[in-house]
Image 1: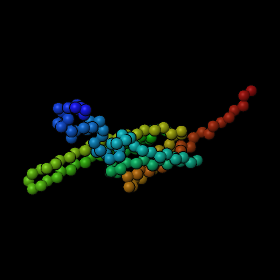
Image 2: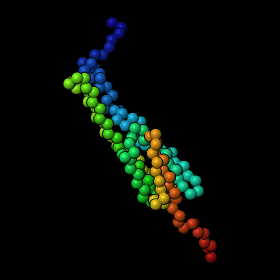
Image 3: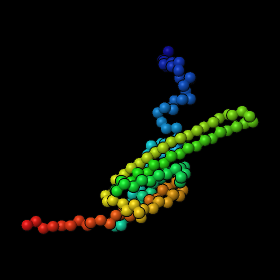
Image 4: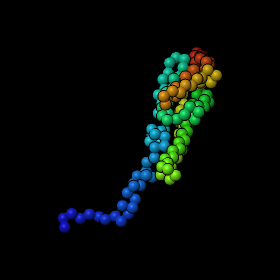
Length: 141
């Protein structure tokens, strides 16, 4: 009588679905788990270099928008998988997901000279700084 346990009549019924609604299913791999795009932003005197991790995403499903000093990256992943055994369908899986990330840079970006490359799940942006007026000091009289 020392070991008393609480009986839950629904435990066996929902055992396979435990945590299903509490975490992402993994449609976008790393993207679904974090819910965001991981970034590295580096700056030198003339350009910003951005590395964004987009594992498992096709190049055609990536969009980059530049508006002044604001950069937005969005990615979409679609996946269909059907396993057949003879004429009987055993399992059909469909995943769809979209992530987006925007960030602000210190200076405006020269959109005409900006470039993007995508290889091995990493998007590399080269964003030249816009040549504008330099800060001008004036003397107070």
